[in-house]
Length: 140
Image (tube, rainbow, N blue to C red; front, top):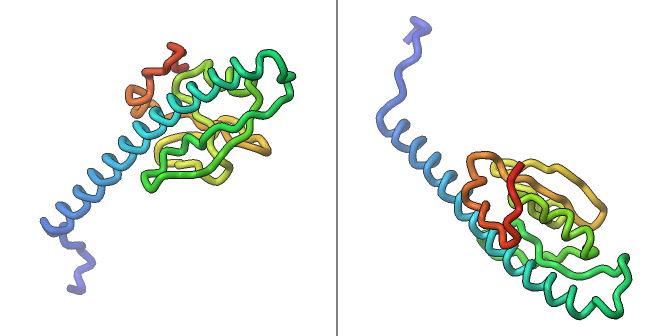
């Protein structure tokens, strides 16, 4: 024991670490897919808002969108954005608006912070899970 050499990790420790890694990976994939689904919900809301607001809303009018954090427990957060802000965000298919504090650093990077919302960009390895943007916007 006093030789200072460390023992190799046991098989059980290696298997446990692998299971945790797979679990984290599956959770990140599920969250990315949830975010893509919420993007579709917001696209429908934006279309309705754009149609209804076309005659009465000015460019500063705020519309409510759902937080696209993809929390598996079901986030009920709401974000207020103008339609121009929402359209600017949608120019890239791997960007999502979330409520401040709902960022997930293990799957995304914050690219913009605003008072009402945060814009996150998916990590490259998860981009294939979210690249089916309804608008056909590319990842950059």
